[in-house]
Image 1 (cartoon, rainbow, N blue to C red):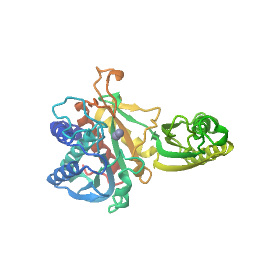
Image 2 (image 1 turned 30 degrees about the vertical axis):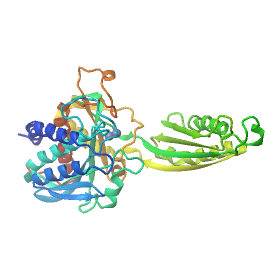
Image 3 (image 1 turned 120 degrees about the vertical axis):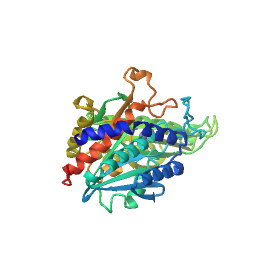
Image 4 (image 1 turned 180 degrees about the vertical axis):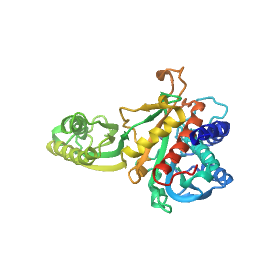
Length: 406
Ligand SMILES: [Zn+2]
Ligand SMILES: [Zn+2]
């Protein structure tokens, strides 16, 4: 039996255990860094496999090492463990037992699949030359901070130093049996900005005696849309959205302050670097021209997730090894959604994959998307995800020079 055949057969063998682990995790979700139950379940499960486990990395993260029979390169596989503040409406028998918290982004499945990959690779341990590092991180949903930076600061990419990294996300747009892959940017940068616009109060009947911050804010919002349309090349993808507008205190009084909260999504690091300055200059110019002023607070969040070309070509082969060529789906357009994996991908050659999780017979428009209280991924994609992760680690170790003894 070839190694790929072995991996696929092991993934089938462990399929029911992966589903079971995911149900355990799904029942007891936590948000942000508060994933104690999941983290200790993960650590305990990895210890039972005989792996060298480190708890409390970057707060509550868990890291496990699988050493092959000889030292060699190091490949990292990463899963996220956190859930969302959403009241589950799936009516599943294993639905969340924690009120108002649900695994609506599928991170429960990522965690269970990575445990599955650890099981598969443990069975192949004697044939592996090199090390696989399993990284379970909290707080993926907590932009702009995230959970990855604390783990990186705590040395997750060192001792031993990671040479390449792979992660996946369940993707409802894609049917089960397909894995989406793309060279270059696959997920966007997500930054946050707050603008405080200041005017001067006066009676609503005598606006000439003050500066109406509401009218100034209206001009600022409109003017800033032109930063996107007039100062960025039209082939670049950029979105500027203000999600909240707060200001004023009485119907007949000029507001002296309006606060805008928004998000800027970009794909290109250059566009991301240049836009905050342009936004600040234009917002100030509009405010000052109207007699007011403004202050911008800009917080850089997740960088774009950029897939490394050579690593992509190895992992494309891994998908083919598991599913055949027809399992590969070449993604044409990235999404402007942010992803905490970008912190790893900007330091280590990496690949982020989209795992099809929609039963083929259900149309995309009828399938609840990520972050929806009715999101339920197809369980039959789990063994595929576990096999792809295991195969990718195996292929990358081989490519990086460690090789695998036959
Ligand atoms: Zn999410
Ligand atoms: Zn997610």
